[in-house]
Image (cartoon, rainbow, N blue to C red; front, top):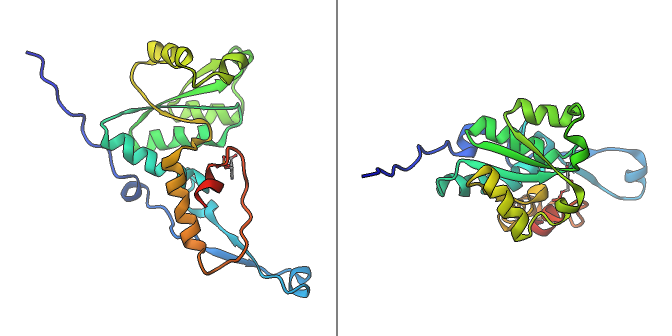
Length: 198
Ligand SMILES: Cc1ncc(COP(=O)(O)O)c(C=O)c1O
């Protein structure tokens, strides 16, 4: 009879990677701001973790925790050739023991030398899979996902930019850290996951 064993648990991301949280606030003391009575603070999320800086930690941590709890050991995610999200996912995989697959926009890149960003992903053990742009646009359609499962087997899918409901929950902590500190917050916006949580 086949014995089914649970995979060994992976380390808790926060215990293993010791993020710097809450991230520090740094005041920008420039005369033009002071003259207009504006106090400008930088929320130094870039200091949270060297390999998972900024929103990357906040968005990935709940996803990594959920994957680990579900016994999933492979992460598959999507991004462009210079995607910081792909970089962070590859690094998280290396640091925590997940296999990672990066589905990259543009099959014209498949035969070309890897750029610095994708080379870092590969060095962190990420398998890179280049998808033509038409299919990349349809990356969440059932037939495209089925083809990815045929090729790579079981995986936890993390969407482009890492933005899903778990990620938004992670980014909500950013809002909690800023509560009572700032009355206006400006945030970079790509897929919108960070903003949604904030
Ligand atoms: C450093 C940085 N900040 C913010 C963003 C935007 O995040 P989001 O995709 O959650 O809108 C990105 C991604 O594009 C990023 O790399």
